[in-house]
Image (cartoon, rainbow, N blue to C red; front, side, top):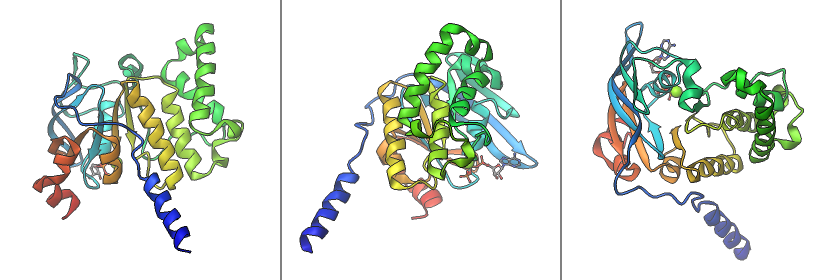
Length: 272
Ligand SMILES: Nc1ncnc2c1ncn2[C@@H]1O[C@H](COP(=O)(O)OP(=O)(O)OP(=O)(O)O)[C@@H](O)[C@H]1O
Ligand SMILES: [Mg+2]
């Protein structure tokens, strides 16, 4: 009996070993996105309030803050879903007042959605291929691209454990597989900057591990990754930079350990 309990405890220990070998760098390099004096109001609510913050290149950034602090709104602005009322956004040295949704491929930006964007009555494969066509219809029709997309499709199906479900419609998938399909749609786009809006929410531990592995794979390729997440264990484990929002303003930024220990963050977000 004692041995069995020991085995379980050992197994648990193994499970908590970080999958990513990621350390905070001593100095941050260049910024891939610079945000200056950004504001977005919704009928009197300042969802983003005169925000200036940078997204460092090739880092994994945890974008955190309490419910309603403006995280999704910020990502919506940076991915062309919303137009800000004021401010400047510089992506790779190109200054803009806003980003257009049809420019995302040009900027090599891809994202998932907090509320999902699957098309229920088409297959897993079609959902994946459509994410490429949506982003670049012309390129997706070229013969050379089609071969490339087919290769990528097989890789993405494997990474997301969706190979055996490839012909099922999205509506037939379990919640976990649906979340993996959302991530697969983003992986199909082969971007440089990835935004994941709560990719772990509601997932069983095994699928959390799988999503961590996918994110680690992107890190190893030097991608810039922004993860919105409420689980601080996952933020510590995956991220080497943290941005904390509070009422649409920047509350803190920097090394996750330091940021999460700071008095301001503990009081206003973690409530401890
Ligand atoms: N389309 C909209 N119309 C009106 N108000 C909105 C809209 N989108 C966001 N808001 C408001 O803006 C504020 C910021 O919302 P946002 O969704 O960006 O927060 P969040 O940090 O992503 O929160 P959560 O952790 O709950 O996802 C909230 O007060 C929200 O109610
Ligand atoms: Mg949100």
